[in-house]
Length: 272
Image (cartoon, rainbow, N blue to C red; front, side):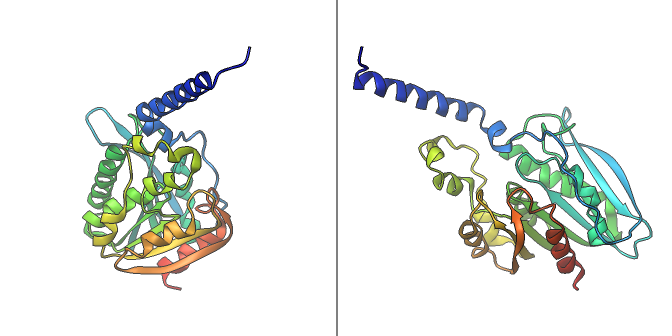
């Protein structure tokens, strides 16, 4: 028995309605993804002695974030870097960055629902948590801190820029940054029709206009998730954009942990 056009249209509409309803309800889970395992960072060329301390940061009375502090032993200065990860990213690997950067103290925390962090991630909570992370690190480091750098990768662009726009940071580094999630959705045919359901937009444009810190941009040579034009549109909004570096032989997933990326970051931060 042939299927009528009306039946096909109804089936298509039902599928669309179900998909948009799911996206509306589970938006935070879909956007942030799920960090299933820690991807390793190959040890770098710097023979530094460091101590790695686990941290549990209470961001509410019921929610604590899992984090790490990698502190070099006998560092002549207290230079601090805070890293905000991307989608599906467990940031436990970041404790190995001193083997590239040298005498820098590194902090990184998993988003809510990632690893052993409690709660459930959303744009609102992630931005608020980013400010609490910065404030707690500032308290821990005290007046001995000579430089505070914030790094954001992909989705972490929004959290890093939230901090840089509202707190005093020495420098900002963005890996695969974007203007807004809405702009990314518009570029994907399968998601374009559901853009009206997007409540968590991660719009970085307003923050870009007020950030004073010098900002370096690192892009993957082959990035199918966030296009270079989208990243450069954000760069154009920054008041103090620094070097823009395309890292060879990297894609969206491998960019942060690639030895060339870490070496580029070290050269920039250490002024070599």
